[in-house]
Image (cartoon, rainbow, N blue to C red):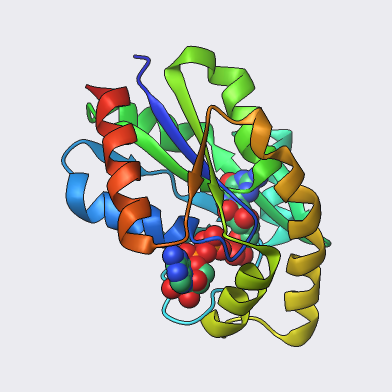
Length: 188
Ligand code: ADP
Ligand code: 5GP
């Protein structure tokens, strides 16, 4: 069974996780989150099997070999993230659409793969300065990890035009309202 996919991509710190969580709270009867596999360590309150499937690098490589991923990427040096085909199938089988929180390159891969069945949304921060402030404010990354995310963000901002829609996330409430409208228009 084929269903729909709603992809939220952006540089780290733009606010996609916050927006996706809000949408899940509001429309959990219509959408479900694609839980990615990742080789990074859980941070803060994250729960294995809810935020990510936290797996070892060895297991990740094994799953690549078994072709279990629809897309995967070494998002940060030495740290892999990927979307499992079984996640998408599980969610479609429950009659829901799949919602993704995924990096920019991964988002474009999914869009290319699923075409008209996918809506690819780029979450745009008001400025690079605001993005850095949000990343620092989140307080979840070491200074080294922060620098890596900032360097990557600079390149990723240039991909906005390749997405179906650019969603400005300046005022969070407005961004969530717009995201809700886009979602409902697409899945209904
Ligand atoms: P991402 O998932 O894109 O890395 P997050 O959703 O984790 O980003 O958001 C990064 C930080 O910015 C979080 O601390 C979040 O609360 C905050 N944030 C998100 N959207 C806004 C906004 N519109 N204005 C101010 N802060 C925001
Ligand atoms: P974080 O470590 O902050 O949770 O995520 C780092 C980046 O990896 C974010 O941009 C996040 O959206 C992205 N990401 C999460 N899951 C996946 C995935 O399955 N595939 C890809 N390509 N990126 C992902």
